Image 1 (cartoon, rainbow, N blue to C red):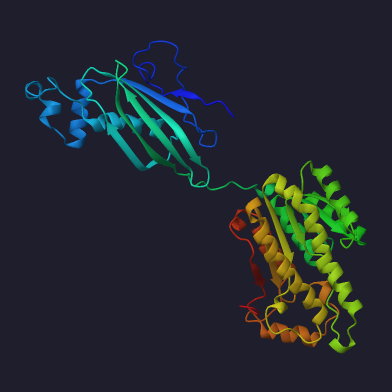
Image 2 (image 1 turned 90 degrees about the horizontal axis):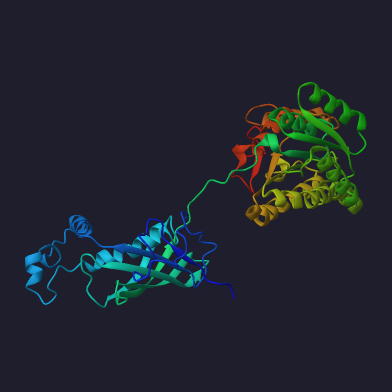
Length: 423
């Protein structure tokens, strides 16, 4: 069992036992730390009560009972002299609670005092408050109180419950300039636009590529020439060991773990009637979209937990939110699985300060839609209230915003960036 501590309130005129002048613990100038308070701890205060104290209390309370205030009246009672207000003595318990234990935010929730003997002007009162029970969940303390006069006689005793209110504080998250971003499939198209937006915002960027080494190196060179911080990192996101190695390389380069993960890697839509689609087609699409996001997330999350901060953004598709184009079953099955992964991770990782969201564009003017028919592209543009397709930079701007303070209180959301195609 840990040893109890004894504390003396700063400003107390001597030890809590009014009969003693030496041997008391030194006064502390700090509030008690609620987390460190334990049953058995004692907090003490001593005070010589003056006529000025009685006058101040009467002025504050409005209680000018002549037994407290009039010497001649008091002399005609069996006390022979003025009796100090009982609540003035109890007031010093409040002093201990508010100024020592538990200190800031302390609030009485229950009290029960008995006054056993009168206190007179000039008496020296020693007050001891002992913690008998502590509730971490309710942030409350049960206390016992005893007050003695200079003759060692108990003049007041009792018990009570005190709640330590918790101060609401706005948690400070890492600024984007102190974050390392890993963008899977970041060498081309939307991934390259996201890498550019994050580098321009000040993040340290790792541009992941599988086979497009030249494109990744050219992109990083371009970002570096514009004062950005960017490195190319090779990894096959469907291979766990490859992903783990890539994130470790990124950590070594930037001397800190990844705290922004953009799960962008994915195969291009290949429209195919369902009856002509094989399970191997579906599995191949799930592997690059879902397995890739799974491996990257598992590799990045421990470092985010270490920093108590992180952003994971999965790239989805607005077509999984409304009537889909025909023949896109395997592609949208994968994107729908990522929707579920987004919500599950957001719920699980929120307590660690990790936000998980999904940005879901419609068709984007990149090389990824080069294989789609011109008719389909025009139809989609005309069905969009803004009457055009998105640019990669417009999608990247939303992703970047979620990685800054604008995304501090956003998690579990799916944001359609589709010009109104999805509302």
